[in-house]
Structure formats: structure tokens, C-alpha cells
Amino acid sequence: MNNLEMSRRALLKALLALGLSSATAGNLLNAAVQNKIFKKIPSSAESIPVIGLGTSRTFDALGDEELLIQLKKVLHIFFDKQGTLIDSSPMYGGAEAVIGKLLKQVDNDQNLFAATKVWTYGKQSGVIQMEQSRQLWAIKRFDLMQIHNLRDWEVHYETLKKMKAEGKIRYIGVTTSHGRFHDELEVLLENLPFDFVQLSYNIDNRDVEKRLLPIALDKGIAVIVNRPYQRGDLFGHVRGKALPGWASEIDVTSWGQFFLKFIVSHPAVTCAIPATTRVKHLLDNMAAQFGHLPDSQMRNEMIRYFKSV
Image 1 (cartoon, rainbow, N blue to C red):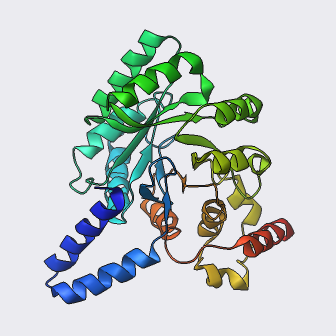
Image 2: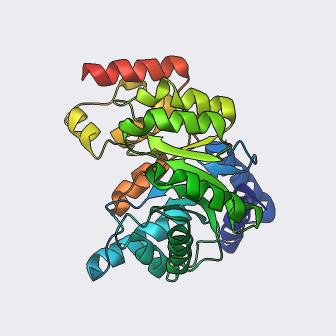
């Protein structure tokens, strides 16, 4: 059963619990699902929502009880809003331990799509680190394991191929958030059958449109986008500026949604992973996975408007 089917079942159960008839619940379910934006993972045709949850610089909260309470609310609402993909890494301090701690405290994480990374040198170190991550998350297996910033990729790629063949992970990926790795990443994507690639992309940083996104589209590699707000810089650029009047045509009511819908409307992009510690921001992010996406003409207009404000 894929995540879409599981999400439909969870939502139908919730609607029926409200006392709605099966027919009414079914009609509401169909309307909700039709309005939600999914993208397919090319290597399997499994569908996932276009907005996930990043944990860099946000979930490193061990020992901060106030922040942990806040993050628990974020996680619960993320799943309530039919979110699935959560991305982390051993690089993010205590983030993986926090994820595992909070997953035990929420009761609506049935559709979790667990994604993390291997970030070390050496085969055995990689195996040990990935098992530590699995134990920290307290899950049976990861859906996606990624080679973080191409670190020791030749060694880890062979390990991940074996793990996938044995059913220990479902998908193999590779990541970068640095332009200096783009040339090397291009060679990898051209020559190895990765299921996923994760990279940085936003309306003000479109370098990956030149080569990496076209390659991913051509090779059938799913794309996860990190740093969708350029670590908040995009909001600084538009502070005090009004959205264009035509934003309503793509069901956008905030600058955050504007930025996210630009990203996930690219044909090669599968999912964006904004990170936040605040429920208000999470709700705004999740709203970007509903409604209409801009077409190529609208995307160009979005770029022109962003540059003009």
C-alpha cells in the first residue's frame, strides 16, 4: 500500500468518526484528495505530497523542554495535514534523537516517509552510523537513505545498493547543498541509478535548472529541495511587499506559499522540505500542497515579479 492509499484511509476514518455518512465522507475525501498535490517517485511510481519537513537547525533541541513541546505540536500537525516525508541527518546534532523521541509521543504518524543520510567516511563507519540513526528514530527501516554531501560516495553507494536489495531501505539518494559539488553530482546522476537527489533550489537560486534538474528529469530521479527560503533571505527581500494580484490564481495567500509553489511546480521537483519550529509557519507551508500549481508561463511571471519588488 502506498502513502496516498494510506492517507486516504486515515482521512476517511477521521471523517467517519465525525459522524458523517459513508457517502458524505467519501465525497469530502475525493474533493480533498483531488485538491492535494502529489508527485510520483519515478523509480517506483509511488506518490508523495509535494511538501515535506526538514529538520536542519530546527530539531536539534535535546534538553530544551519548551522547544520539544513546540516541536511535538509541529510534528503532530504535520501528520494531521497529511504530511509524510521527514528528512534529517546525523549532521544535524540531536535532531534524529528528537525525531525518535517525538514519534513515540504522536499517534498519527502512520504515513511517515523516513529519510535520513549517511555522513561519515568508511564502510563500517557508515553501517554503524545508519544503524544508530535507525535506532534513534525507533523505526524498522528507512524509506530513503541518502549520501550526505557526496561524502565517501563510492563506498556508501555499494553499501546502500546491498541494503536496498535486502529490503533494509527502500530508496537510495545523494545530496548536496553546496554549488561546489554540482559538477561531481552531475557525473553521478548521469551514470548511477539513484532513486533520489536532494539539492538547494529556490526562486533566487536557480543554478540547478541548467544541468542538474534536467538530468534528474531525464534519468527518472526524484528531487527533494532543501533551503527553499534560502535560510530566510527570501523573506527579507519581500518584507513589506504585497503579493501580486494574480497570486490567487495559484491559490497562494502568503510569500512562503509563493516560494514553495514556484519550487514544486518545476517538472523535475518531487518535494520541498522547509524546516520550522513554529506551528504558524508549518501551517502556512503545508497550505502550499493544495490547490493549483503555476504553469511555465506563470513561473516566469513569478520570477519577474520577485525581481521587481
